[in-house]
Image (cartoon, rainbow, N blue to C red; front, side, top):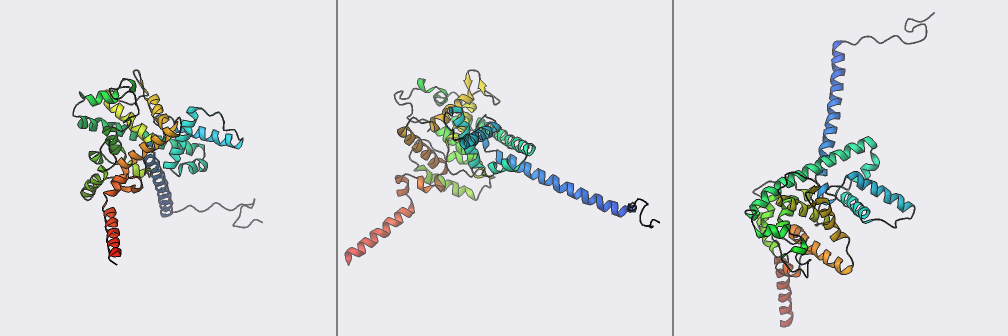
Length: 342
């Protein structure tokens, strides 16, 4: 005979119906879990979008991030097969772009390995959303700022900036002289990577001596204005890179034009080719002499933008003006004087 607690087939009787209070508690628990899940998803979205805002600045201006990943995977496979010969200029440019991106976003490479295909695609979409939004914001910022810096577009400097190197009215026997050292480029770089207000203290040609006074101005303003985290802080940027310069040059050229929205080709002008040429100028040097000039140029840029936090990059002239240098020299002189008296 079956027991009262079981059916003839040995199955347990269905559970008793829950009361209204139990149902409400279960629904509240489920709602709380949904809220937590949604909050986690929103935090991830916000994080990826925020981190992605620097991607176009230091990696690639137009190329899809998927192309960088594909090239890196290809390099990994080729390394296993010990066959790294024959890489093209475009492939090298993509690989350097991937390395620049992973240097700015250290978590990016490991995330690609951890996530499945769908989550990886979702992450890349959010990063690109932040990157493209930042590029648009930078364009709007520079369109306004450059107008105030130049005080009108009917100005010789505009023609100088837009003129091809072979038609420039400077010394055509040395096309590299003064290249990428325009004050307006420094201003634009600081406006985008640090803050628009810091661009007011930017200077062009020089050895970095202006950094001291600029930093004093920045310190005086530090307690007066609270600013959000800048792009350089988001991507932990401490030195100016070739691709960040290329980004700014393209942005300035775009701001000087009459185009209102980003496009790869504007009439006869190819922005992607322009960006590639600038990157190749720094990364594809013909030899050690050109490499030395490029290194000195990047050091000059770093002094102009991050001079305060990079004392090792300052010129001897600038270091000699620092109070700590004067103190050290004075103490040494006093020590020598005391020794001579003895």
